[in-house]
Figure 1 (cartoon, rainbow, N blue to C red):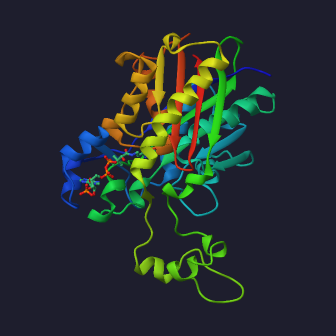
Figure 2 (tube, protein in one colour):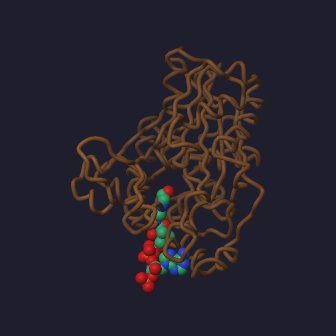
Figure 3 (tube, rainbow, N blue to C red):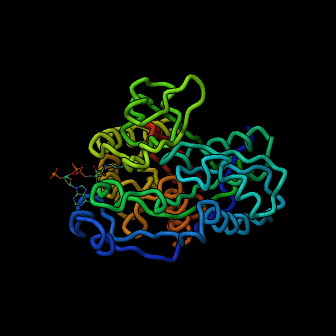
Length: 350
Ligand code: UT7
């Protein structure tokens, strides 16, 4: 296998800053509650009717491509990770492709939520590793602000999420000792509904009880992803069992990081930088303590951007790299956990 590396990285966050105090104007919440439980102080929201998930992704991708020393015409394949796509289908990958004038190459959309970037990076690593492609663009982008419940009912979820995008170009490494050392992917579908955006969806075809609950029409053939009842009941927002997610996350993060370290014969002491998915500052701090890492070896930016799901790792990694906190030769660990449940890690010699 050819060793793959991250050859270029970029991110984009929308200009509009929304503070906890701004959210207090529309729902019953407090700056204190949000900071204490999540560490978040503010997040960014994209411009409605102007920006979309794919346009955010395009902005990040352009920077990553330029930094990789290539042009859009050199990209061989696109991997787009998001849970908040422009359309139900087709995926945002082809929309980014059109915006960037890269028509003709393959575009794969993946639905792995908070772990989407790690899954995407792993797929890119395999394509580069086999020699099939030389420049794979991996994008994680989210426009959560379009699909959140801004009434008090939605406060447990809405205050956490923000918009943004990050991208990398995965290329063959000239030096076999540098690049992506390994990636590790996991999932447990038993917890699928603990953090989910159920509607619109085809679940009416699977569970008979859904017919009544979601107002599916009683007909022999045909069905609907979206029913009048879902709209009338405002049953169109993400739901999260925060405590279950929290408990599972603090177990699986350390496990999957240890898996990456063991696979490569390292311990946590060898790490120069740990970039966790920005789910909750408390989760990151718990994992940091478990690994025994000092503050300067963990990159957190959830305070500024909230949880940007598939975008959070490439945004944080890019910020760390731009700040000089990730340097040539550093051992960097990325890890994520989220809806699915899905989780994963990547160990990189930068
Ligand atoms: O990328 C993966 C994504 N998700 C996560 O990683 C989430 C993991 N879970 C968490 O981060 C935490 O569970 C949350 C931050 C989501 C919630 O914290 P919690 O300590 O588990 O709070 P809770 O859901 O148990 O709610 C405690 C109280 C409730 O009130 P009562 O029933 O005790 O009176 C909630 O109604 O806090 C209330 N509450 C709020 N109050 C003010 C929930 N959301 C808010 C809010 N502002 N935004």
